Length: 542
Image 1 (cartoon, rainbow, N blue to C red):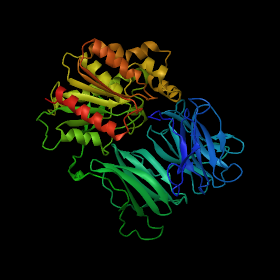
Image 2: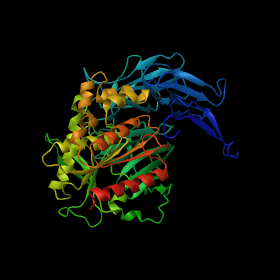
Image 3: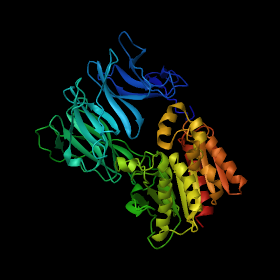
């Protein structure tokens, strides 16, 4: 409620009149439930919930018919964050995984009747790996998995399922040069779809099973492609880029043995553009800059119409959240709004970002945290050095972990004798790692301590907390937060606002009482976007 992330399940009767059309199915205001998948005959579904402990997500089955109709059945009751990926047609076996961090997760097959787990985790010697299931193979005696245990890049593998443990074989050698974004199969297990992450672009591929022969695709514009449902030979996918706002398309893959012919996709969802010509929205350029230690950092660069290198304009650097995330060339409402107002936009993927392999992902873990902050400041210096902007006309902006970056980069920049930043926009950001870890929701704490460091190491947490170095922040800040945020409690924003005001730093604070970790409601998004542009206009825009 109001963004607190305690998601519950409800049933909808399309033939009943409101309010009787919606009824609670599984409801607990203090519990967070996650839908996993439908049973193969649609007679129920598998889900996870943390009702016994905030940090333990256990696996359940809900049936609409039969002896257990209307009652949850607990399938796995173990400590940790668990999820399920697939189930056999008879419902007796499931593929499940335990997540510990972005670089450490384990996979198992679960016997639904006995609760016995058989492990199929693969990892390098004396190391960890990120493992997840795609699903059962066509014979249900093998499993398809995604893992980064070879070369640190997430790839697709198959393994036999037997008490002897994993016997892993690599698949799809034609795409091993790229990180696997996602993968899925149709229920009939005759088609396998994957998306590879190629410099941030999502590129789709389709294969026939069990042969793994490549199947033809229709022409698809470059951007970020997401896999949708596959049923028989019908394939759904989504496309998002600067000019396509996450629309869905469908096509028919030709049956095996049939000639491909001309394949075309049919658009099945449409955007209400309010008369805006999306085709005029600028596309980004993929660039690369060198950070303080020689690391090459990729970034997407957007320029407003008429702007060019060598003619400086005000610029905004936006950092993604996560930190296990990636800025990608998808449709960006706020980005295009800023571009129409004459601002340039840069989206760097600083160290710690996903999409570039395990080594890059772990370069900011624990004691290396501040290196990613330095990457962020180097992005601003690059914009000035290349003639895109000028010192004092660059703002930083981000949400969640990106909000931390928006608060931390002014600290690092303020220590320089040649500062380049002129303003900061911090959305639901971490500014005090001690209070953040103490007050964040229980289901988040264990995962975040792996990334940022344990509460027991308070001295280090203080060293990376912008609030503890407030004396070096000299630029105006706009702070936005949701009152019901369970991930980064609103106290982070209040602490920062008070500390900056005490030092006389111009500060604007906007707190939404009906939002959580980010702004979802249209009226709130419109208000914040308007407030942000007004803030930028009077700080770096003039």
